[in-house]
Every structure is written in structure tokens, then in C-alpha cells.
Image 1 (tube, helix red, strand yellow):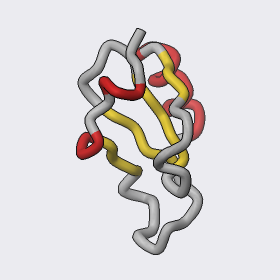
Image 2 (cartoon, rainbow, N blue to C red):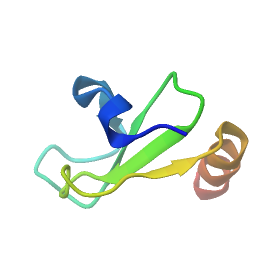
Image 3 (cartoon, rainbow, N blue to C red):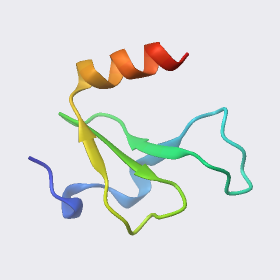
Length: 63
């Protein structure tokens, strides 16, 4: 399990399809055993964690 303290603040990224004006998007951190996901407008809020396979299936489904 990864706690919020283990997540690098500078490691979050959003989709290249997201606008830079604070639109509705999520941010993820790459290179961890799980894929943490958070709301880009609520950076101090909670992050959901997904297994890499589950995240890949989700991303492929929404493409």
C-alpha cells in the first residue's frame, strides 16, 4: 500500500488532451506499483489507487 506521503508532488501528470486552464481532468503518477489518480482541481484531496492492469483496461476503454 502507498500512502499519500509516498506520492511525489512533482510526479503528477495530466493528459495531453487536458487544457491548461484548470479544466475537468485527473492526474496520475507513473512508475509506481499502483497508479494513483487524483482530481486536478483538488490536489490536496484524496487519491484513488488502481492496479496497473485495471488502469490500462480503463484507459483503453475510454480511448
